Length: 188
Image: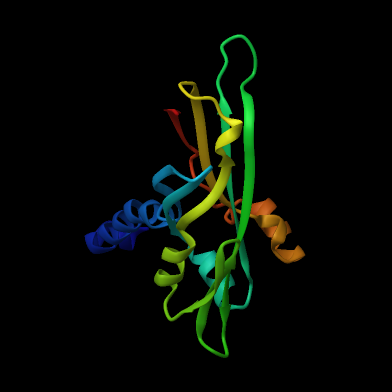
């Protein structure tokens, strides 16, 4: 400690690390940028854009061959003041993000996504965050001029991790990655 009192440079370095480390740690997450429902024929389709950022731990696991599974949930309900909401749809889809060391490519596959390879992680995460024309509810189940509530969220499915990593995920909480649900109201 006496050395630190004499050398102000080290105090500056420690202060910089103390201020910047929370910023570096807080960059991982999932943010929903936009979401909309559009009707084509007799079906409503969901289009959405999500910004997915992995933590350094998740990036390292991905590079070492661990596949990451993401679950996207969509709920559609009719809010009622006198009782619980009337649920019309609750659907989920699983999207897999993996790294092929032999090809040196990131792979994204899942529902409505044909397996595609990407050279960079940023391209793969961009594709992971795209939801295009996902059929979510049939038009005949809904009533015109009624108020409906739609909810969209995405999370990392830690139950699909290898068992030793599941224990680590539960013990440390550093593997948690999810979005704040986006809730919007609409009238048809």
